[in-house]
Length: 301
Image (cartoon, rainbow, N blue to C red; front, side, top):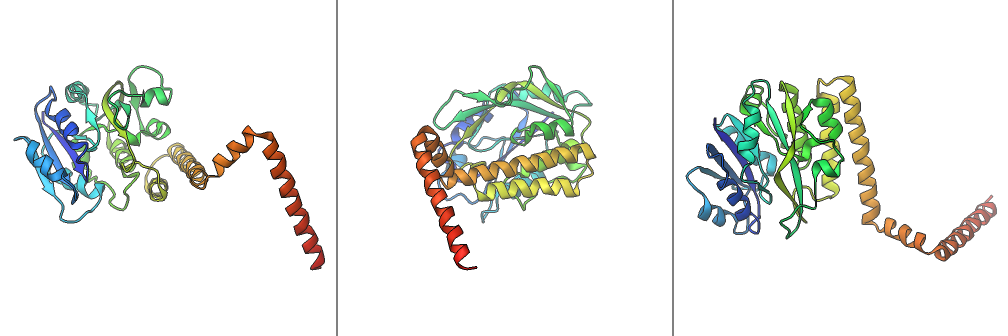
């Protein structure tokens, strides 16, 4: 059974060699690697050309089209029985494919997620895992749409039976640069018999400045829009819609906190709390301003 590995790239000359090495060193060797470079302007295409083996197909976009467009090109070119995803600044444990494919040999299991190792920039050791960070219980978990939404598994990269994708005409939504993976995996799971989240961590996820999930105005806008898209257009049950609405509200709250941090307001409040005397001065100043406004309004009456 062959695996099609989908790898979109864009300006990752610092990371792409480690990513490719982790794929080429897999103990499961029946795979094809489909790389779609999204018009990189650094040495990424040259490094790919130097390292690519006979299992590798390379597609070069003439214009920068975004990760969803690139993944869709790769999906259309895929010939494997299973589809695996990896981002170009991440890497895999060498046993990842072999370990996860074992679960997909079950006729009723269509999607398998592994745990995720969080890696800081320029580090090789994880500081935590997705399950530990979110305080999940140990043991493999059966994943349905309710649990997928509640646990917010869009960040994880599953391996999926290609028939689930091709038979239902599923593609990544090219309108979104962020949140498109949650939307796509939600739709895949909605067509699947069964999904499993493993305890083991075979995927190493690098959090870095400029990566696909760096927080920004567009990041939150896309997350909110993709979640709203599911709320309004999916055939999900009311229970799942409620979970999606909770996700929407959670993202809105995180966006508000991010905006406060960006404006320095949270740091200002924290500094004030460390110095009660400053709070007193601020309150006095505020009360004086309020009194002045009151006097002004009375004079205008």
